Length: 77
Image (cartoon, rainbow, N blue to C red; front, side, top):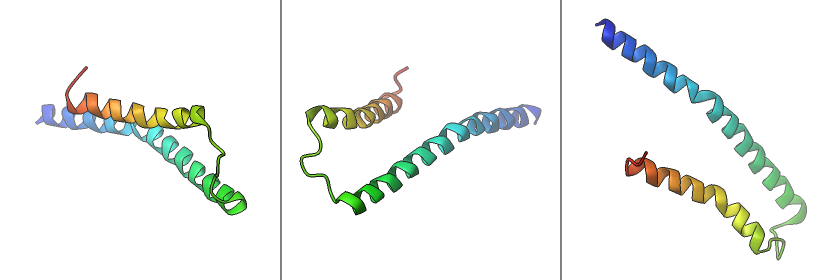
C-alpha cells in the first residue's frame, strides 16, 4: 500500500509541475486574444498587413505543436 501511496504522491508532484507553465501559457494566450480583439475593433481585419515572412513566423508555433504531438503519439524519444 505504501508503494501505491508513494506512486500517487510522485504522480501528483509531476502533474503539479505542469501548472506553472500551463497558467503562464494561458495568461499569455488570453492576453494575445484580448489584444487581437482590441486591434480588430480599432483597425479592422488586416488587409495586406502581413508578408510572407510574417506568415512563416506565425506558422512556427503550430509546426512545433504538430511535431511534438506527432513525436508523443508515435512514442519517439
